[in-house]
Each structure stands twice: as structure tokens, then as C-alpha cells.
Image 1 (tube, rainbow, N blue to C red):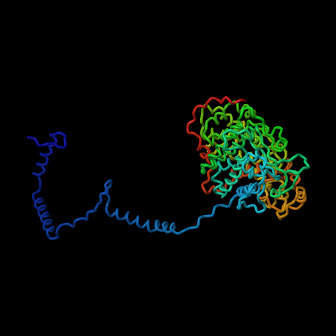
Image 2: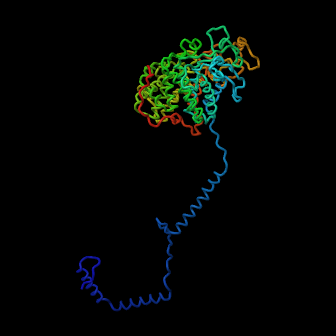
Image 3: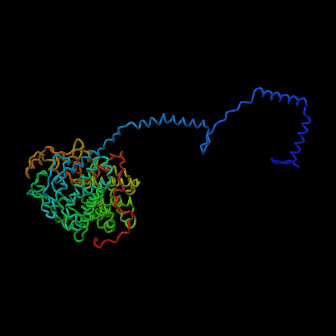
Length: 623
């Protein structure tokens, strides 16, 4: 029987090995064997005397479930954590527990300083019964009998704003000013809050919209007239009126007629835009916001009324010379865009994107003057508003074709702002001559600086670095630098080294074409012509019209600080509204408070998430 082979291999090799071992054992020296046994005995006896060998200490381990580690290593790790907490963590906890003063925000830049002042101009232009905290010590209640000849208006047309250096209330530019202020709040509310002007600017807007709601029957769904103006002035007139007389508003003692119009597609459209934009500003006040949207819908309906589409200023000599409207198609586009943003009603966006509207408005005709945003031309603003819709929501069919057209037109408008493309002339000092060297150039400068800065922010909000002007790629910084250059010019970076904003800087106009600023607040009530002594005085204004932006220099950067040069030295509502909007768009103050460039979502809170197919154009739509 063979023994088992657990290692494998040949059994023959194993048998041979056994025989070799046996033969080797037979040849052993017996003396050597005896010595070996004796030696082993000695070792055994020696072990009896020395005792058992010393046992080695065994390491202890801890089973942590996923790993087994020595207990000694675990203790070392524990004490290292304790030491780190004592040396690092505890001092940090103590340091954070100690109360610290919040770091001061960075000082406001020059644009914020100018913004604070520019808003005060509206406080100085208020008409009606003024609040105690109005903040202009030389102003008081005025125009409390305004609208007394409008028997259908309960309480008259008291309130609103005086337009400029006279005491007339022109509702067309007033409404545009409120729209512009509201737009700036909608886009830059966080900046207004950061610089402490949010409540102030909203109060100014509400002062204007409360008054605009009085200019028509805002509680009705259908109206047949709007009041377009309070006060009047004949050209070179000799009878007491708002131009012939030089009186503070508080001292007016001459007739101030109201002017109503039964046709006003432009005026009605602008008032609708103002109320709709303000309704977005006041969405935190549901009742007031609803009142504004309802009023906007009523006056928009009036503006669109078939058979009543004669411009509001036509054959109105008391209006036409001052604020003549050259078209109403731009107000149609402008108001429809605002009505859509305010209500989410797709009938408005369907109208705004109907191909016939830009055709009638000549929006895509590349007419140079149609690229200039102003109280009379809303096309650039309307196109930018509608470009906003495409950039942020991209609603697609059936609106996309027209929205692309508006977007392209907006980009072309922006290209025209740059001197390198020779669209507009610039003074040697750098001021853009958007109105070709005529009076009041700065109101056009600031309005277009605002839309330039806003378009740059729109592009950055959707991560677009710029756009092409022909083969030239222009960046958002290029556009913002243009806007800054214009504001810097206004604030003192010009050949005369003077600020054109009253109260800003060390050198600014001191002889404004402004009745309230030039007539002392001394308790004396001057007659209609008795105020001429103050109009013609060489002395500086006794009342500082803080924040007022004057008309501006001529095409040669020349400026005459005189009350007789009203084209250069008279401030206006629309001028300061554009200034406020441009300043808040450009200022970097408040960035440390987490201010974003534009609030993309505020405008869209009423916009439905889905865009249904556009309904067919209403039968009343007549090109």
C-alpha cells in the first residue's frame, strides 16, 4: 500500500529518497551521536534552571467595523484632534463670539452722489399740497385751483409736476418721465435700496401717477377725452400767463386753463405706459397696482380707438410749440410692450409683434433720428423692451420674427452711439449731439446713455459678451464706457470743467431759467411783471435747485450761465428723469451688498409661463 502524495510529482522520486536516508543513517558515527544526545540533555537541564522563555507582549487592536487599527494609534489620533481643537478651533470660536463692528461700505462713487441730488429736483417741481417732509424749504403749496374749470374732475387737477422753469404742467412729457423712472426702478431696485433711495424714488413716481389718474376718468372702462395740460403760454404774449409772468408757483395769480383733447393716440399711449410700468413698481401694494393697471387699460383703449388717431398736439397752439408729437406709432409699440409686461395679456404682445406695426412706425427703416430715444421718439426704448423679452424668455413662434427685428434694430441703434461710425457728431469735448446741436442737448444724452448701459446689462445677464457693428465686435464694456463718458462730461469732465448738475461739484450753473429758484423766498408776493427784477438780476439764484440738470452747452462746448438762455440753462422733468435712470444704471455703489446688474424676473411676474398661439388681429386694427 502506498502512502498518499499531497504535493504531487513522481512516486519513484519519493521511494529513492527513502532509500538514501536509510543508507545515510547506517553510516552515522556512533560517537558523534552520543555527544549530540548529551548536548541536548544539557540544554534541557539548563531550561529547568532558567525557567520558561520570556513571553512577548501582544498588541491590542480595535475593530472599527470597516477597518481594524491598533488601540495605540487610535489614542494618538484622538489626542491630536483634541490638541487641534484647543490650539485652532477654540480661538476661532472665541474670536467669532466677540462682537465686531461691521466694515464700512465703500464710499459712494460720483454717480451715486449725483443721483441723490438729481432726485431732489422732482421734490422741487411738485405742484399741489406738499407733504411736510418734502425737503425743499423754499417751496410751498401751489396750484391748488388747477383744473377748477374742468367740472367733470372732482377736486380739480391738483398735484403732479411743473415741467421746467415755468409753471405749466405738460402731461405728455410728465408721463414719459414717470415711465422712465419706473423702468429704472424695475431694473435696478437693488441699487436704489443699496444707496438708500428706493422709498424716495417710489414716492416720486406715485406723486406723478396719482396725478395722471386724474387726467381722465380712470374708474370707467371707456373714455372720450384726456386732459393734456394745465396752464398755457402764448408766444410773445402780453397778457398774464405762465410765460409772460415771472412768478414763484406759490404766487401765481393769473388764469391757468386746462386743455382737453378728444383724440390722443400718443398722449393716451404714453399715459398707459406710465401707469403700466408703475403698476410693476408697486406690485407689493396689490390694491394700488390693480388701480394702475385698470387705468392703463382704459387709457390704452382710448389711444387705440379707431377714428380718434389725430396727434394730440395737432392744431393746439398752446401745446404744439412746446411738445409737438411727430408720430403715435412709437407710443403704440411702447405702450403695448408695457401693457404686456404689466398684465401678461397676450393680446398686447400680439399687437406689438404684428409685422404691420414696425412697418407703420418705420422701425426698421434705419432713419438716423429714429435711433434717438426721447420724449417724442419711443422707438429705441420700445425695441429694447421687446428685445428684453427675446433675450430672457425667447417665446418663439409666432412672436420670434418681429422680436428678432426689434433685437437687430436695437443692436444697430447702439452701434450709432460710437464716434468711430460717424453717425452722430460729437463736440470736441466729447458730448454726443443727438439733437444736432439744438437746445436742450443733455436730455437726449442722458436718455440714450441709460438705454446703452441697460442693453449692456441685458447682454451680461445672458452671458453675451457683445455684438457686431459690421465687421467690428463691440463689447458690453465699450457700450458702458460710452454711457460713462457722457455722464462724466455732464458731471465736469468737459472743456469748461464745470458740472451741469446744480449743486454737484464746485462749479455749476448759478443763474437758472427757473422762476422758483431765482425769486427769493422772502414773504413778498411779487406781481406778474414784478418778478422781472429777479429774472434779469445778475446775482446768483437765492434758492438752490439742487440736482437740476440744465439744458447743456452748444455744439462748440460753449455755455452761457444766464437766465435768458433757456435752451442752455433751463432744467426739465424729462432731462432729470433720464439723468436719474442713467446714473443708477452706471453707478457701482451697492455692489458689496449683493446688487445684481438687472433684476431679470421682476418684469416677468405677470407674464404667463406658456405662450399660446397669437389670436388673430382685432378687427379694429387699422394701419
